[in-house]
Image (cartoon, rainbow, N blue to C red; front, top):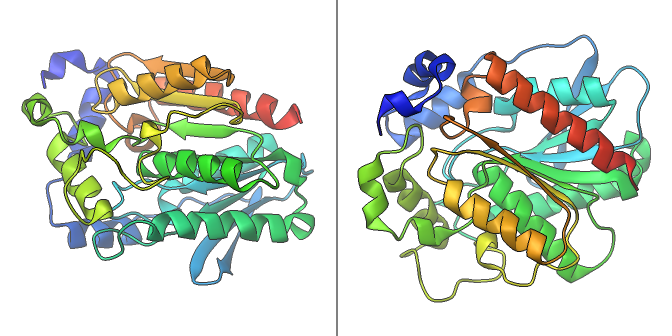
Length: 302
């Protein structure tokens, strides 16, 4: 992809974000990455059965709202700590308790392992809502990339299961539809940060087989679902030059047609995940500010 299509302020951070290494090395690097600190938010560890959680508790007054956050990593790697800066910032600014969930990775653990893990994390938050200071009616679900796809799938499953529903879905560049990976013509685009070859590896590992089949199990690829009526309000953001732009736009439009309130925030000239690997740039800070404002309003509306 032509670097001239990338916002100038993102070009240098993008060079640092480009990773070409074995998956085991990426996993190790994520675990060893420095973790930011905050005196305003206490970070605790917890478990939902075998699922490891990080709990972010604001030390000031609580709003009563909560967020289950799911990290990205293409369904292949990642760690609940990798979005520490966003979780700390959101917890402090919104007075919101946040739980960031780890989950099992493909290909060693194909679907529905990761999906079941984030469902367990949701159940843990409901079970501990009182001690966390959360009103269950004001509990949202969010994530980035593969984590945002898992969040969207979790929202769909909870709608089918009944019971307490998320008040909002907060989705950053969600990985939603395996059929993108089944389009070999996209390989030539060589999308920055996350290209279609990596996308195919992630989806095929998650499915334990080929991508783009006529049908897939429910909740495996949330972008394929056609019945979206009754889902909670959604915030979706993506960069207009990233691989997921078309599937994210299609999902936002499908939600809107189903009557779901949707806010789409499309960032021109932004590659995938820039709000994470270029978090200190003005364009990333502005996006996070808009997203947090939306979440504050969505969580207060119940």
